[in-house]
Length: 479
Image 1 (cartoon, rainbow, N blue to C red):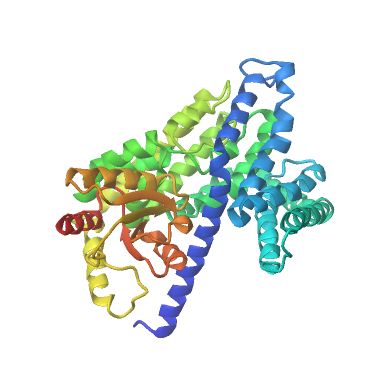
Image 2: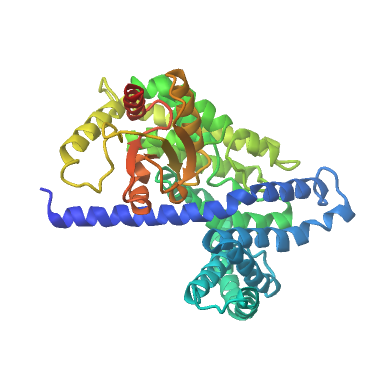
């Protein structure tokens, strides 16, 4: 029996998950614009440290300052700008230098805290003095406000925030190093794999594994932490299993998803397959655990975070001496995930897959409920009379949404619809004048929170989803 309390509890769970997703997306949008710098540092490290491909004492001297100063300051600048614009970027960067000088570890986590906080601080100050500045004193007040507040934030970061982050960082490091020393590091897959399919992987990767990985790389030239959540092997094994033993829709779409997932590094392509049949998460966990165990066995690691998580990124960031271990870890993870998922799929005697059933049920529920709650995502049949802008949105605005937007634009051209703007965005960055937002169904709550008054179309995958075909048909009829 469905009670008001159960509905309320479910709403709270969805809301909390959406908030965590948004937090992960925020972290990702601080990191992604600077990935090139991280890769540059990874290449520098792989080449010129004593255990690198081309050891060079002189060029090696760039490694330390780059990870200590350059990378954290870039993160702080981006985070501050996201919250408070250019003034926020300057403010966040000023505050972060206090963290860097006041600690003996790379301050990535601190930069991702102080950067946005500095942006928020100057934004609040500007709001407070808005329309109160005497004519002719704008530049003086604007410059001195950043100077004074930045000075105070820099001291606060140096004296208080830095030491707190060092203690927290040491605690997390000790906990994970204990898992490494006892051989229990593969247990992290119990957290990583379910988190990934719920679009929470960025919280773990950008918030924990990347900072720890960069610290370890500075010391030993590589880190296994970059591999514990980004291994493309488990996803490849799952999609191969659906290719051979899936039913109908899943079997047809899996081969295309393999190419985009494994070669393109967009892991979101396999998420709908797990959500369609949740028990297959056991295959993902088994694949992830076996991959980590293999990386440990070969003492393998990467020099930087692979973004996107494609096999090409893995190989490009593999240091000398780790190629066999990295390839073995991906291969073993693929095989284990494939075997476990295949057993699960073959044990299912139903003639149709859950994918089609869930779509039919979803459409029926939308039809029944659209008049009951206007705040719910609308059915694709409720297309606005005139559509000029469609926004594909995802967690970070670069992976699956970019793929979906590109594919949908090509399909619009085929039916001679060329006056509709189709672009991809991070959910929170979708323009206010967008007519339709297209998101994965697991990001629906987050999209509704960010854009309560915009029409939302939910899908299961970003390429061949029936809802996209319905939307395409509706747009063609309007022409």
